[in-house]
Length: 384
Image (cartoon, rainbow, N blue to C red; front, top):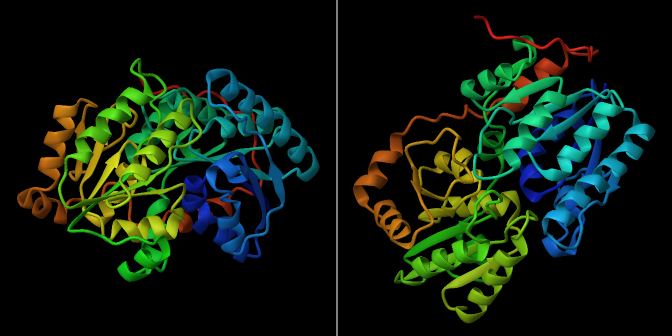
């Protein structure tokens, strides 16, 4: 069975890596790796190298990313992705195409696969994020997909609510947990040597992406965050760059400007990659921003996540996630709570709501029972 896997970012490759490894190692499958979007961009540190360094052969490169990040450029990126994926699909004709999440380039891939009658395997569907147009993209991909692997029961129910038959919807947990359990991570000293910095008494990892459906500007929101962080004493700030969404460039320019002026207490990294990122989570005190990883993976390290704004609103939140607005006073309060010893103690035994790190094995088991797909999908109506 030929399974194509599409990956466009450092984030989705990190999540897909254990599944790709199983598909590569199991003789039942033939893995075809299709790389696109941010992986192929100098602006985002050419993260395609992470894929080859992990031992995977790149079967196809599908450039689609426009240089700008305004709404016109994003629309052109989707169009470019449709064109590129259509050509590769026509050449390869895989049995299934694996797509994770809700990125714009993956919408293009899904459209091309749907028109070419290639069944789609969608991972992390059914989630809601009301602060971004990712919400609409994610649910659109769900309707174009044949098999659905979700991260929680609530998300499975939502996929079914969208008319997908329950027999094709599987709650396997968050696939990123598989890597947390199985990847060899770096020591504190190895991280410091690799990134050329020194941890301080307190350390905060910051990842903030544009919130595409909010009226306030990315610049205004991130300026407020920097103001709150700058007042902390004896605290080291590790920034990773924003993604290629609309206005991501603005945030990244602000990161570079701030870290250049505060070299003694801050560091900018375009992409940590999965190993360095998960290793960092062992040693930082707080993760701050609005990345989905703060909701899905960070709680497994029993450290606080300060989730700012509405970009992740709608996702199930663990006890360690502190939700706050992008107002200065609210961020200050969230920082104080996250550093409170009673709060730190309380989250050490929090229930893990996104599975136990066996998503890959569950997906492989299901795929071996679906050697042929029927794309005539009757709409499944909920029982009245």
